[in-house]
Image (tube, rainbow, N blue to C red; front, side):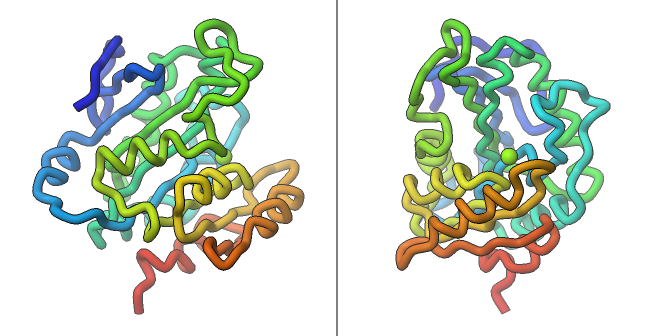
Length: 236
Ligand SMILES: [Mg+2]
């Protein structure tokens, strides 16, 4: 399904990571990929930003010891797992593009996050990470890469892999650009969590401004509140 240019050395808890033909890091849960073969019609998915939603954003997270899950993140993911909703992690990782760390380091961090989620019976179906940035170094310098959020490339790629109906899907993010990527991919709604140490208020206002008749925006203060609101897993 994916042409691998380069398979990274380590095996991830969530699957074997590879860097695809577009230079994007992809890690697919083998069980989820097996199950997707039986899916006949597109279904809604939960798209999660990583830093600031699943784990605490420490700015260019590159140390396993710095991995700390946000309260409520694992339960949000496990509820989606139980409801049969695919969970795709869509993350800009310009730290790779800027040369701060490499894919193997990212894989180590991903493994630790997956391990901590696993302790709470939560797993992701897939992860896509985009290294491109206007301040990146070759080959990752790109002023407006179609995969870098707020562009919809990673969401569209995830949709084709997991047979996702984007128009019924939701995004949770701590930046307005996370929600904007959702709009650009045709999602139905987004939840903004104000977990950012700085700029939380500014990002919340920017996210709130994205509200429209086509896109629902909910702003909350914590990841737990996001999981309590998320329509995909709160159907009663
Ligand atoms: Mg974030």
